[in-house]
Image (cartoon, chains in turn yellow, purple):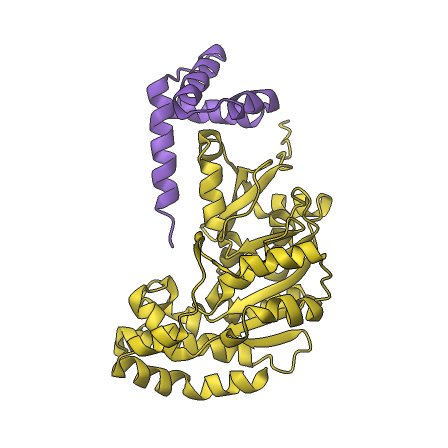
Length: 318
Length: 68
């Protein structure tokens, strides 16, 4: 009779979830000793892969093995979630939170996205808790975990709230003209027609085909914002406009999330706000006025048509 | 080839903590390829340095081809 040995996963981190014939396969990379300090999770994975061992020798397990691991290796409890409409300061917020070694911040981790959009039926809330435990394993001096989700994950708020009913969260948004100017300059994946399935945003393929690329982008952003607006009565939710950053983070956000930091950590957080969130070698520049100046008549019209009313509702939700 | 032999070697590595630590402690891509081939052959696997390099290229290509 064969004996199956349970995989040893301590010191390993899920980096991907694949679906094969409707079954989840979790792909793990050896990450012990690697600090998770890059702005995005994918960048941390690339850092890991600099050592060929970590690229070449990964483990693939079932999702049940993920559950077994989570049961015996509880991760840090999430202290706050960041949802956002994209191009609205979410990376600035996550980098400010990550500026102290007391915090582990997961930013747009693909394994989380994969489970949020898992095909078919399955205990997705439970899977999500298992994945959060595996990703949020204690790392160095970190004692708090924060998670920034992908922009389109706002449409999965019902699932996230069911899985983590006590975790506070914020929804970041920004003047739609500024966001659309940013996307027209360098499009995010979620605003490219066909990059994500149409049903991700409650659309059909026919809906997508009818829209110009600009209108599709605006429609997607509107769906993200509308999804968040369904939660304005949630006592765990805070809605924040970009114009309130970065001061909001060091002040109201830490209070709302009951996070107490030392004076040194607060100073590090303020200094992080002075650097470009995606490239710490570059100083942060406020570019709202520049973006509005770059807006074409078409961008302004699309922002008004698709996002005008929703932006007003978001503003009043603050 | 050796892709089957490499797959078997990979399974052996994942089952052997000492072997994992030895390979993880080997810095430098060239040094790693040499060490991996050396350890594989010591275990009786028909894996040479070219096989390790090919596995690295395949692994990188497969990782890069995942959807955005």
